[in-house]
Image 1 (spheres, rainbow, N blue to C red):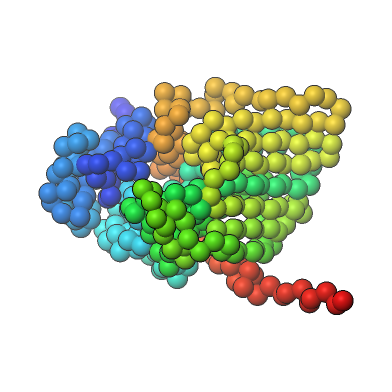
Image 2: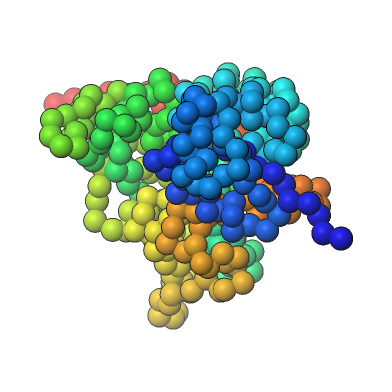
Length: 364
């Protein structure tokens, strides 16, 4: 007899869609073992509208009403970062399984509080490590395609922190909201790099704001109160040197370029999007004694090819990892403890950036 589906509820699904509608709904419906049963909104009216728009059985006017439902086992929080803490707490108190989007919280202190409350099976949306290309590259490295890894370098761009910004997303421009270029694209990329090459053992950082304003969609400008240049560097536990540099604004593709260098060989991962969560990804192998060649991701890595090109594609693989973990007791999907470590790592890098020494002026 088959296992009963895990009943899922979403906090943050609106009738107009947004990230929850574009990514989570299709992903949940694609993964065997999950069933979307309820949504919670800011009011009973908004919840009913979202439930109707996405054909979900129940609409709840609050997260408390949602977690009280017997048919909901796993509750997804997909709202803006400043509200994560207040919405995750009642889920943890209810004993339901929590799956919160990354960043887990607005500050490291909030993340510590949530991690301390959370049972072991509390999940966070660091889905880059579940992407087919990430798992393929991890296997290539493990199989010795580049030999012993000596260094890894990443350069990418993040359009919101320099490109045209609409009013709805303007909260990203204020670092006090906890949704910055450091905490979103840089953190997602760092987690992916560590999932492939192992953890950082040391870290330093340089964060800077080189522009004060960004263009507003439709004309005018918006104030920028967050860094638009982020550099993290350090050494992996293996001894390899690592660096990640995100630049605000838009540049010609590729917007994502990641290289893993070994002894006489390297792997290059290119994407026309800012992270591995979407876009057209190319994996290329370089060798000093042979022509460069593209390495297509084998079909076996992609469990949901029907979702390619959509925001739900990588998210579905993240949900599949959660389902397998809950069924087997394994630990492949990222937990709140992983999120806390990443929050603290980013905090270390920020403090290192503030504490940097300056170079004395050149003497004439």
